[in-house]
Amino acid sequence: MGTHFFWRSAIIIDEEHDSSYVSETNPRYFTHEVAEFRTRYNKCPLVLGSATPSLESFKKAQDGEYKLISLTERVNNLEMPKIEIVDMINEVLDGNTSPYSKKLIAKLDECIKNKKQAILFINRRGFASFVMCRQCGYRAKCDDCEVSLVYHKEDNQLKCHFCGKRYRALTNCPNCNSTNIKYGALGTERVCNDLKKMFPDVPIFRMDNDTTRGKNGHKHILEQFATTSPSILVGTQMIAKGHDYPLVSFVGILDADVSLYNSDFKSNERTFQLVTQVAGRAGRANNDGYVVLQTYAPKHYVYRFATNYDYNSFFEKEINLRQTTGFPPYSTIVRILVSSVSDNRAIEVTKKLYDNALKLKQKYGKQILFMQAMPSPVKRIQTKYRYQILTRFTPSEDITNDLFTIADVIEKDVSIFVEINPNNLR
Image (cartoon, rainbow, N blue to C red):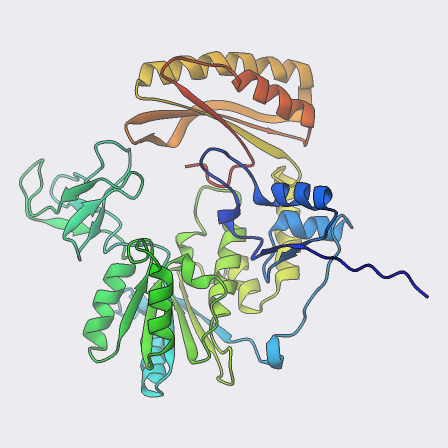
């Protein structure tokens, strides 16, 4: 007889690729590493589940560090929904300057007439992503954060999505008094506003950080949507996470390029994951699903692989790119983040830490691929000025430990954090 193992327990991380598994506040940790420690401690298996695994996890499976178990068919052998790419440049050339392509509106109308449900995905909340004066170029920014304010029409307020501070909406430019005010790229609130005009008799639900903050906010919205047809659900990336609604026959991705051109080496990976996950919400019962993906870069390889649900080809392309450019998993990125209410103190401490970090370049030589001190992309959040030291090196516990030692100092009025392979470099 063969030997059989019966496990009393297991640790399962569903949607293992999701960025929420990386803590961006103290204590800073990666859930996978905590889970791996617990599986060793409790002598039980760890199961990572995802239709679009992170490149790091899939490479470990390819290398034999993880055991790969593939599900090659959709539940009940259902067909994956067809994804049609719409080139928004051609829409403009054809005279359609709205954010909604003719194909998207036609498919949405068809879905409603068939008394089905639709999901529209836009990974921006609010009514407009920024507010500026066309006359002098003034742009409304948060007093405490170095970011543009987002207009929320429902509250008629400008909000900072970093610190939560609120301001009165602009009717005149505070700089030149002009009334010629421009509103930036659309968000979930504006999409709902537009849909109510196009489909006045159809219930519209919105799911983003603004509508789900209350107790059971997610549950309440999803329960209402599940029991209402026809209806439309508009949301950010939270609508892509495993929801199963049999009547959803159409999904519209309004601006797939939002995540594609982030200044982040993971932007291609995140875009592929989002497109695939959102598309998978359609056609989950006996209904044929259909997806319209709007983009200004229709020939990008991310979309080519996503429309065919071809994760393996995407992985091969992207992992080769990572290897060529020397980014994770072929290297480790460590960020030392320095913040203070005093700009001068933040700069002073950053310089001191950087001088110590430079000594590691002499110690480890070519193992260190990149090291630079610079302002953070968002230079100020909640009144604190932010600077960072970015180091990229061939994987080495010794270098990682040395960087932690350099940052393990107490400086008056200054906060110092260390992040390994940070999920967000804002």
